[in-house]
Amino acid sequence: MNIDAVKTYLIRLQDSVFDALKTEDPEAQFVEDRWTRKEGGGGRSRVMTNGSVFEKAGIGFSHVRGEKLPPAATSARPELSGCSWQAMGVSVVIHPKNPHVPIAHANVRFFRAENENKSPTWWFGGGFDLTPVYPVDKDCCHFHQVAKGALDPFGSKYYSIFKANCDDYFYLPHRQETRGVGGLFFDDFNELGFEKSFELTQAVGNSFVSAYLPIVARRKADIYTAKQREFQLYRRGRYVEFNLVHDRGTLFGLQSGGRTESILMSMPPLVRWEYGYEAPVDSLEANLQRYLVPREWV
Figure 1 (cartoon, rainbow, N blue to C red):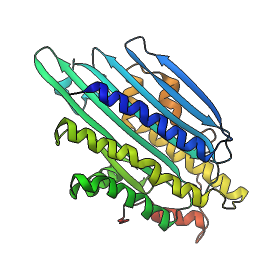
Figure 2 (spheres, rainbow, N blue to C red; figure 1 turned 90 degrees about the horizontal axis):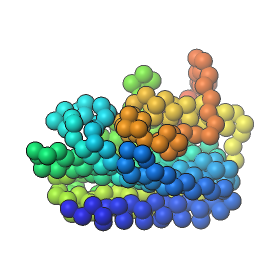
Figure 3 (tube, rainbow, N blue to C red; figure 1 turned 45 degrees about the vertical axis):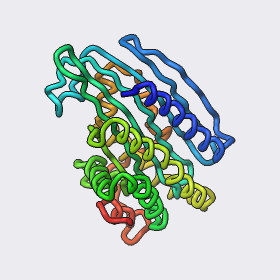
Figure 4 (cartoon, helix red, strand yellow; figure 1 turned 120 degrees about the horizontal axis):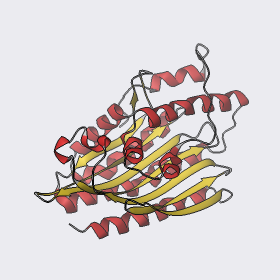
């Protein structure tokens, strides 16, 4: 089990995603923040802001460790309670300026836990998903087609399984809707052995840019109104609600004493809530609800 190879890959993935976004939006401001964690480990956060395409984009790498797993990690795996652990990963969240360009999220990670009496427990996880405000079928189909193409070399079953996982995971029960149009999600994955599981994880991470940036290129110059911008900010509220209420990664980071600025890097720069909002009947805004249920795209 070559953990150093995983770390090397993740750092390179952070570089490649950042370079691709910077090429797409060279006007964006850029901050890099290297940090350390008192309990062990650290990371490198990169944030793009105030671009002509991306209002905010966060691309973070972290490698952290500790002596005792937090509740968010052991609620589903009680046998790991009290284990020492280490976790590393890359997380990407992109909030575009134009309402016609979807929000995008990607994450790949590796986790290892062990104690003196048991052999190490390890797994990979990750995926990517798309959250449009004004969905276009062509864009959704492209996103899922790239996702399927990344997984098919490892077995025809994985796209359908990981897609269903994504639909289930990125669901807001208090709103009774999905966060967006889905993508891929997998966790606790080790069934192919270390090398092949690592290869699958790399395939997912490496395909994110080709899944998302063609959509950006098609939509970034679309004309939008002030009303559509307001609706975009309103829908960003759903993103915040999911991340703060339901996302296991956010809970794990906060419970493990992670760096708050990096954990909450996924939050949009501007957002609004409106009490009792209802979209006008037959409007583009009302049309979004038809997309917030699982459906087949490929």
